[in-house]
Each structure stands twice: as structure tokens, then as C-alpha cells.
Length: 346
Image (tube, rainbow, N blue to C red):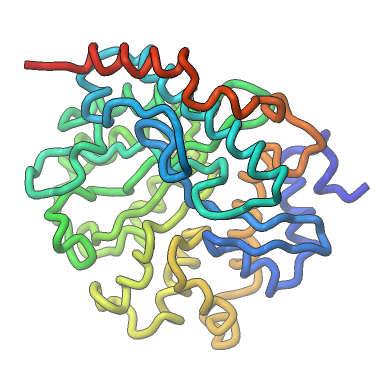
């Protein structure tokens, strides 16, 4: 038996064994959000991009709940947990059905890019409804409940939650690709990083997504300061860029001069998977000596570790038999109605 199929080993050990079997070209290909299959190793294609901020999104019928700002207005973390649990149940049901048909398209995976735990204090930002509001404590409490509901407490992750957007991503939407968020250290620690730290340390969130903007001059998806925070907090999941944020390095932030340099900068900083297309230049960066094989393989290990934690390479998991019939079932709709009633405010 190949070690990466040995379920008695740790996810880290299995991931390392799997990546050791890959060529460097295969490993680099897995760092794209739309990762292709590695057929000779039995690895199916996988699309990392799926959404579930208030119910499973963009993949047909699903139970919808009030937006996150409404969920926060319930002041009921038990109910927030239940929303996330239902969302992950429906994600598993759909994943099971899609997998039977070898359908690996976008919005059909188990990595849900939720919750959004940015702080909403600027009305010019167009995405405040995705957040739990302006209060760091309420945001952290709702965020932890949501992560625990998405990820479950089983042998494998039910789905993988992702805390986003790291960090200070709440400036004017129109200039998000070039915006430099200048924030003092006290406000950064107490307001903008508090919920992220809580989700990493106490909810063990599996993913973190970077932001489009810069934070005090550093692009968020390649920030030495922000990545250092994740290390300090003991984060051992995967880091994903916001979609096409790495392209902003050379097109808007002007911190690099080419896609090759941008790909290298992000990878070296610790961005494991690129939502976008800049990582198609990783092999060119390798040829130019801007990155090493070890750096590519280390990011690939982090991604394979998450897929293993989700049970993707196991013979069976406790979630494999969740039927499609649970999707938008009456019981789930009743919880949605309960949330709608409880979220109403004057």
C-alpha cells in the first residue's frame, strides 16, 4: 500500500508521502484553485472554490439563510452553528452526488470559503452584509460557531471552513485592488486581527484567505507581518489568495514587475493556492531561480493535507452516505425561517 493511502498515518505524513510521489510539474499544478487530476496517482481533479457564507451557494438549489449581518443580529451562536451544520450537510450531499458522476467543477467541492470575519465600519464598502458587523467580539463568537458547524467533530472534516479576508479588507470596494489600508498597531490587533486569531486558535479553522488590499504597505497575500501572525497562532491549514489578488501585485500595487515575480512573491510568503491564474507562471519562476522545488512541494503538502483531512483519499468516510434528498428539505427550511424571524431588528 502506498503510504498516502494508509489511514493509520497522520494527515501530514500522508501528504508528504503523496507529494514525494509527484513530479515538480505535477506538484506545481496542484497549487491552482482548479487543480487538474494526477491520474497515475489516482488523484482526481479538484476545484478549491466553493462558497457557503449563508447557505451553500452557486451550485443549484440549496437552503438559504439570512445574510451574515442578519445571522449576527440573532445574537444566538447556537443557531449560527446550526446554520453552518446544515450548510455543510448539504455540501456533502452534493459532493457525494457530483463525485459519483466525476463532476469536479467549480462550486462543487468541500472547501467552503466562509465565514467572512472582516469588520464592517465603512459604509462605502459594498460587502458589509457578508460580515457579522462592526464588533470584533461578536464577529469572533459568530465566526467560531460557523467554523465549528462547517467542520464538524468527526474523524474527518465535514467541510473545510476558511476565514476571510486577511486582513483589514473593508475599504471602498471600488479601489479594493489598489487600496493600502493604513492602520495603527493597536487598532490592528484589537479590531482587525482579533477574530482571525480566535478562529485559528480556538476553532482550528482549516483555511485562511488573503485580501486584495495592502496592509501598511504589504500586499495581504504576501505579507511578512500577516503570515508571521498565522505562524505565531499555530495555524496549520492552507492559505488561499483572494481571486486574482496576486495579479494585483504587478498590475495595481506595483510591488512586482511581472506575473512571474508576483507568483514567486506569493509562494515564498506562504500562499499555498492561487485563486486566479498567476500560479501558471510558477515553473517559469522556478527556472529563473525565484523559487525552489522545496517551496513548491511545501505548499503542495499543505493542500494535500487538507484534502486528506476531508477524507478525499480514504476508502470511506462517515459523510459518504448523506443523501441528496437532504438538500433544501423541510427541516432545513424550518431552521431558515427560524433565523429569518429571529434576525429581524428595528
